[in-house]
Image (cartoon, rainbow, N blue to C red; front, side, top):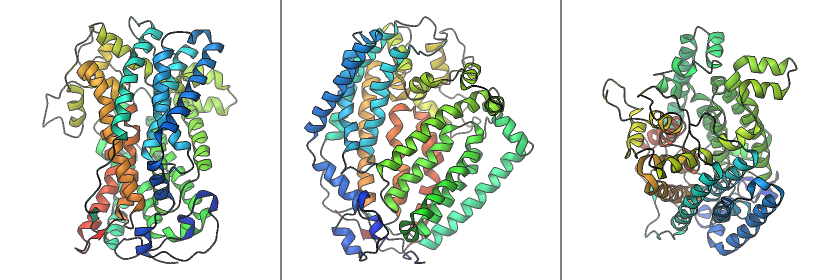
Length: 535
């Protein structure tokens, strides 16, 4: 079993980690030197560079053909869709669909941030609005709701302008670097020592958290209590972040330490990923948090793709199917607790559980995987002068979640209060509303700065994707280990369009901070020599 280089650089890579997906097999090949890596990009890097050289007009033309064909077919089959909202929604679908088509090109890395952002955008900006109308599925309990298709049409116009701005931002050519970026190599003994210490501290935090709820049974019962779970865990944010860190840290330590062995033996790699899956299900899943279960697994696949070997599309397709099934079935536990699980185990029908919990497939497709109805209500309320933009207060409130209330008792108003008044009752007093909605970057932008905020949210998202794309390309092509370990943490930003600022900050803190801290510590104890990245 070969060991890693002491300075944390990747000086050789087996054929299984550097060839295209179709050629992955158990063959030995001549080892690459560090000079080879600097001049000859391996699979994923070559894919990204090839994607940059493609003519985007081909993607636009194909997106126009596919999206308009789908729209006309749906309108011909479903009378409810014969409404003017389909025009701006289809134009939006064409604009973002061209980004999504990048992902299906064989030369594109399956985790290319720009392509993945296009796929997600196609769901949220095109598919979800159409499903809202086709399934007649809308956010419940909205006071004085608008004429939904009309509101979606107005939102579609905003999205057309916003996605056009986004396309301009992400397509701007990057400035050429006069000098390649340089990184201090990692001191691997420090990395492993700090990683093991974090694992032990995290396990202790999990044990303490379980003890707070009276043992394992009390912990499971408390986490299954949808009504009181949030109140029971108020003020436990730092403890939760620490206690849930150890499965991902263990996975990363094993992946780094035995990366060459795992690159050659796919079965061991699969078993490692399955072990992480089971761990995350019990660590995050029992808390009723689907994101705590799925995010570490997704980031683990990104790390495998960057560090070990390219992940085939068929594997991701299988992961997507399993993930969709998990989102659907796990919602029963999230809202119905153990009673819903027991009902299914005892032969109860899925339909009866749907009725008891209020969760069904249309709700998953439009609410969990869409923001169209909520954003259209917010935009309709704003254009109807039913609320005044709060001028950045929900953004400021998001940062205060990291500061104890004793230091700043007068915290700016948050999205829960603002959203509750906009959606449910304009007469709610502070703290009376209990809205748990996620508004997305566009929705929160409108809440804070009106139409300008909604449009600028697309610009901000475009800048984020540009930065993530740049870092990801550099990390995949780097012979150094440290940017590869940070790349999955940065990749989290591809989903920010569907999130609010507080969700983004908490996600970065929970999933990115531990690994970034370990990498930073390992760099501090390294030698002072620096190694250049390939241009």
